[in-house]
Image 1 (cartoon, rainbow, N blue to C red):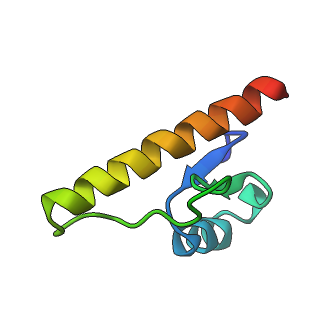
Image 2: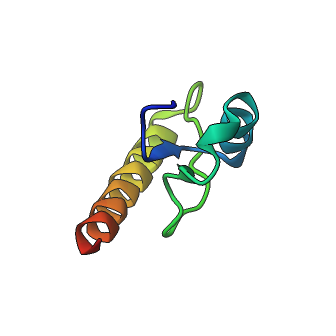
Length: 72
């Protein structure tokens, strides 16, 4: 955690937990879906449709992050 400039997580709970465990990570932990979907649910235990939906959310979120980072 300490060696990374950007840490992407799926939920606000993950963000809070990381920032509590690693206070120096504050300001470097962001939601993967920050630019659109917001929180992205864990599809574990869900059906095929949920996995497909989450896969699309992740793909879109990664594309949005790449576009934002390229602009920097």
